[in-house]
Image 1 (tube, rainbow, N blue to C red):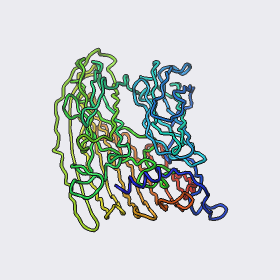
Image 2: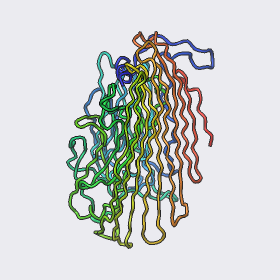
Image 3: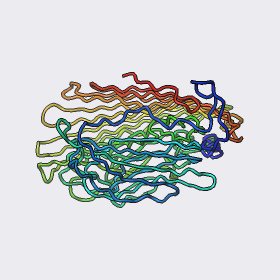
Image 4: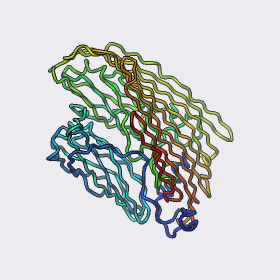
Length: 541
């Protein structure tokens, strides 16, 4: 971890102004080294699919971030596109120049977190980047005027000169013709009186008494430059490493209703654009999810009978494995509610709650090459029913998370390596009138990285990351839908440490292939870079 922190501090995450361009390989080829500028950041994921209907635009934020003062404004719904939209798309355009760290930020409308993001690191001459996200799920909030708050905390001084400029817009696509209104939640709620409670985030929730489906989303991020930014590298107290945790590297995001565990999930091991001591890895193609931090999602419908009593209920979000009193995690929470339009109140009950005993081992093996191996697993199944206007509906949610890792390092953390895998398997079965419907998702996150030469003079980082998800929907045992996501990122970068920028002789290659398949749809794009130039941009579909 010393390699991950000390080198980052010395480099200011690598965004040190250059004084001379590196040599090139000749016309038409990439340069042999990083120079003073590089290609704007780009990701291989697909744009949000939109209908060919009337569209309306609203600017929700346009500002510059120089410090830690939130930007505040007011949002007003658009005119001319109705108020039951087919799609709502958030687009963020940013730019920054000079020298700056990567920064984490959020955008909230009416208190609802609609985007969590991080920033790329700039070249001296400046870069621009673009993020877009489908925010149709927040349509209920967007139908009325709301306060806006946005923050990308930043420090600007004589050393860190990068001012972060952003513009965030919403585009509303009208429901016309075949573009029907989206099946969005009827309400989007936040937790009242939300506050930190030890290592947990807690608040109260009151839902409508006719809620027939309830889900929660938690924008869980480990950040801040401390150990929890690299939580997957934590070791037991007995091991000689710079980041320690009694529970080792395992982290699990949990949500509870009135003290009873309601959901478990594996967090994604996001690497920000200065991570692993080597910003040259991430200048053009960031790691998966770095610009669009996706929330962890939970189906709380089995608890709807309990929540529908009109009273406030305590919701607690925690990250298991974080040492007591240690900060570094942020877990803002939204709750999405679908209501029974033909009933003013529906009742029900939680009928089953089976939690497997959290298990796993963490073993430290000392030696010239230190090694910590760890594995963990946990399961939870909850069931409940609701007596709705269309009959009794029973919902069962089953989830299991597993993690395994091998972490090795040498004296002084000159070499520091991790090979890890996390899986998160979820099944939601709904029994009502007609055949039962089951939706299953298998998520798998992988990281295989190594730093060598952290003690100098030349540091090298090699990394492979994976973000995969396979889903299927069954009705009466017959498949009615499916999707497959495979986002794979690889990179290899090196530079001389503790020398002027024009003597760093930095090199770096990266590649991302993003594949998303489903019935009648295909997205398959590959990006490749060398020394800051885009060398490949290929579609296969």
